[in-house]
Each structure stands twice: as structure tokens, then as C-alpha cells.
Length: 221
Ligand code: SF4
Image 1 (tube, rainbow, N blue to C red):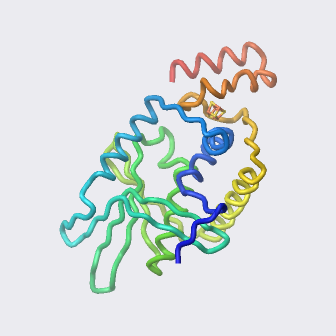
Image 2: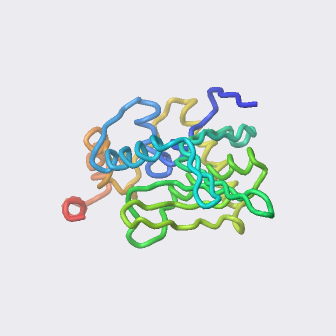
């Protein structure tokens, strides 16, 4: 049975929290919102996917779009909407595959940690609902290619990381505290930069030369 309560967390906000805890706090505790080109691009892609037919059948694979999922085991208590769930039927039974759409492939890696944890949280839900061990992919719109994520060998470690993360998010939500800005944040693509003004906080840790180099690097990125 699906029960939403004050502790239920959306998988999307898990990804927000991992991208930048301060940004997550501004979005979820202060109800701030602002868009930039990156957010608009991601919204267009997800809108396109979620507006697709609810289900397509091609070459024996049923593809479902905008699929709601949840896992209400007390240590998780999460829900989300999958971009896409593929179901392949063969002699051995059904094979489930999650496909998460992202606009841009990272430069030096197959996937970012926050995206990987988002997909892992989706897997926790799908595996729980269908009693399976589903495949997981990220599809990058810019390269029109899929990257497979393999979780089997590190499930326990990732589960522990996810549970610890959810517990920190609940603690911040309950206390109404916005997590502090970290100097390691990648702020150049953040739509909340004008609201957050990270340099006014981070600058106390940086010399003027370091601040200028950081700003120049952001402009040329
Ligand atoms: S500008 Fe940087 S520190 Fe501020 S919310 Fe965005 S990513 Fe986080």
C-alpha cells in the first residue's frame, strides 16, 4: 500500500540534494525557483518523453513512459516518476529496464554521481514493485546514446549511502535548516546562482585572485 507522509521524499529531490545541498534547501525549504538554459533544456527533453504515448510496442519490447514508482519500506519511503520503463518478455520471463533521460553527457565520465544515485533510487522502487533485478540506463540526448549502469556488486554500499542521505534530508527538512554552501560546488550551470550569490559566501575562503580565476573559468566553460 502506498502511503505518503511528511517523511516521503521524491527521487528528483535526492538528485537535487546531491548536486548541491544548499540548492536543494533553497528549492525545498525556501520554495525558491528560477530557470536557466540548462533547466529549460532538461525540461523540454523530459516533457517530450513524458508526453509520449503511454506505451509503445516495438520488436517484442513494451516501452512505458512517465511511470510512477515508489518504495515505502520505512528506510527508503521514496517515490518518483520514471522517464521510461522497458519490459522485454522472453522464455525466462520479463526483463525490466529503466531508462533515465539526460540532456548532456558529462565530459570525462560516463555519468555523474548524483545522476547515478537518482537511477539507483529508481531501481530500488522498480525492484521492490516487480520483485526483480532490473537493468538501468542513462540516455544522453546530445550523443543519442545509452550508458548502462551496473549496480549488482555494490548494492549494499549504495543502499547504505542512499539511506544515510535520506536521513540527512529529513533532518534538514524537519529543522527547516538550509544546508550551507560548499566551496566544492559546481555553480556555473546552476539556475539559482543569482539568488544564492555563492561568491559572497565562498569569497571569505578565497583570495581575490582565486575568485577572479573561478569567475573567468565559469565564463569560458
Ligand atoms: S549557485 Fe552554487 S552554491 Fe548556490 S545553489 Fe547553485 S550550485 Fe549551490
